[in-house]
Length: 108
Image 1 (cartoon, rainbow, N blue to C red):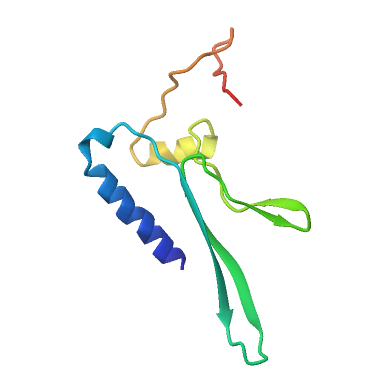
Image 2: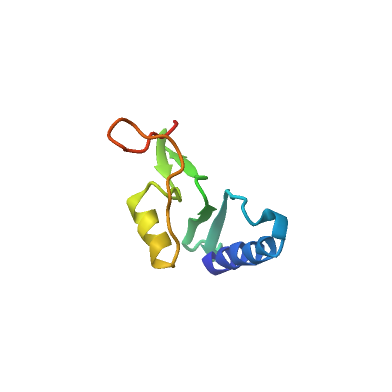
């Protein structure tokens, strides 16, 4: 299932990149699949969630009245995300406001 989800995101990405007037657009998407595997004839089955996201969209599951994050936001101000982007040859540039010490000010 995770392969199918990854492939779906790849196919959509390829199609979007071919639309020239969308070249400077951002994107956000999140999807989840609930998968049940195993046999149903009085044997054990397992249920799990496969999730995927692009951008700063997120999926959260409520379990016993507690929030469980299913995804990690893809935000450029996150250290791990910045390193991932840079490792792929990209760059992260800040074009927003800064405080008096030059640190980025983010909206909430």
